[in-house]
Image (tube, rainbow over all chains, first blue to last red; front, top):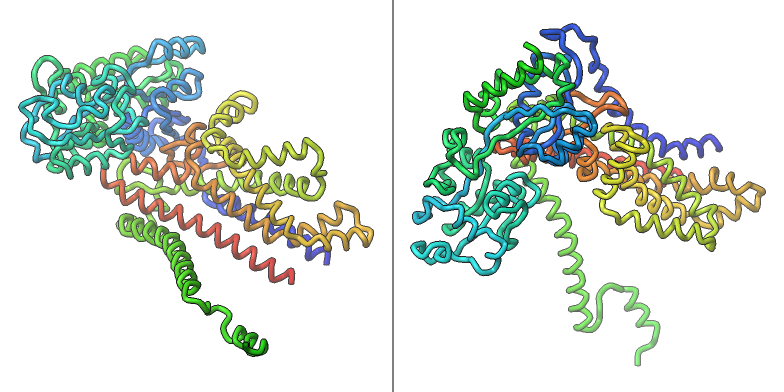
Amino acid sequence: MTRNRMYRLGALGVACFLLVAACGGGNTDGETPSGGGDAGLAGTIVIDGSSTVTPLMTIAAEDFQLANPDVRVTVATSGTGGGFEKFCVGETDVSMASRPISDDESSACAENGIEPVEFIVANDALSVVVNPGNDWSSCLTVDQLNTMWAPESEGTIDNWNQIDPSFPDQPLQLFGAGSDSGTFDYFTAEINGEEGAIRTDYNPSEDDNVTIVGVEGDVGGLGFLGLSYVLENEGRISAVEVDGGSGCVAPSAESVIDGSYTPLGRPLFVYFKAESLERPEVGAFAQYYADNQESITETALFIPLSEEQAATQQQTLDSITGA
Amino acid sequence: MTPPSTEVAALEVDLHTPTSKRRKVVDALFKLFLWVSLGTALGTLITILVDLITEGSTRLNPTLVTNMPSARPERAGIQSAIFGSLWVVGTTALISIPTGVGAAIYLEEFARKNRWYNRLIELNIQNLASVPSVVYGILGLAFIARGFLSFGFTVLTAALILTLVVLPTVVIASREALRAVPNSLRQGSLALGATEWETVYRQVLPAAVPGIATGTILSTSRALGESAPLLLVGALTFVTFNPEGFDSPYTVLPLAIFRFISDARPEFRPLAAASGLVLLLILLGMNSFAIFLRNRYERKLR
């Protein structure tokens, strides 16, 4: 009788035990002693930071691990700022960033004796897109974009003819990234002069595909997106040229690298902890990226480094690893 | 005037058919409302399932579960996310169920309701149940991942934070189950000379097990879908090995889905849908296990 009751009581124990037991089986094959890898490299590389740079590091991490099975590379995505916050406490080896490190962040790193080594890993561009049926605005100036998107335009600017009298009487429908994304930060900083400043009566979405669908379905639609999305969805939407003060420039790999597509083209960064970079596996990872940056950036739909950028990257790398 | 006997007979024939027209209409309307409610609930579930299956059909194959995450959609799988989720939720259950049930037993069987500190605890538990989970993530980053405990960005940290998230509901569900045990059982046991502890351990707890088991499993399965607090404490978005212990780095299914959706390449969308379906299946599995436990122990008790 008593035993029977204890058995009943054990049900809870069984309930939670099964859950744990279920995951016990699969991981016996994990840890194998090192020695099998190409160069005998082993260790763990911890990467964290910007969601924009994540696809690049993920591809690099995956391929690098295939070549060096005893090295473990993990990638987390806590945003550029969140990445630096962990990096400067010494919790990560590599920090991904969609902008250069700020002075505050540098000094936070310095306080903890962490020296960041900067690499440009790819070039990124935002594009302003309109409906393919839009035949009036193939080029927009930064001022015109600011008129559309500035916080002051809220509730007042709602027609294309308010942007330029030569534009038709067509309701203006705005789409774009929501405030959680790096795209949003980048766009608002460049177009409205302050990160986060934007009218609130547009259609925000964390899913860039929503922006594409919105602009596709409305002749008067306009949105902003990462260039990679535009290249993936050619035909459904069209990218407009942007005039940053020195003429209309179409977003493309060439115009981003040569710096003419301003202000919506930017480099993407990765910061290595100098101390980590001296470890053979981290050094090898950085060298792996430098050797394969062209295919990695293209797979992730970014724009590869220019020759000059690549040369600088190699120089920095050589000076640290002492090659 | 009809004799009362026939009225009774009429009632016995059909109690459910209303007599006046107005009442009939009200009755029909209420039934319609109930059907619509049921239809909405079921309809939503079916829509989600159909949507996930149609969108994810191309990737619903064994490689989804056996492959590790990859940056290339054709090779990508979710093995490390499944194991990560099981590790984290399993550890959460291991910690939250004993503590939660213990707290419930204290509050229900031992605590004197008129003491201020017991009332304070009770109020706190109810408030904690409605705190958004991100808040626990911030707390966990400061005190569990870093600072006081400094467990780092590991399975154990994640499990402790999720324990904080689910513990209030575990306590509330277990108390509900204990309260449902008839008082005569306690009185009988005490009258036969059993101590308070013996009464709880040998009579009350066994009788409450079905309710406790269902309640706790349903509340721990909530932990399976959590991603917000884990993002703050270093849950990974890309990892190609399964957790090997409480101190391993990890990722979880909701984060794997998030990563698939946020990728620019449309080939990742079916992957996200298929992974969503896997998450749903694990959830359904846990819930069916709860139902199985309840049925099994309810039958035994009678």
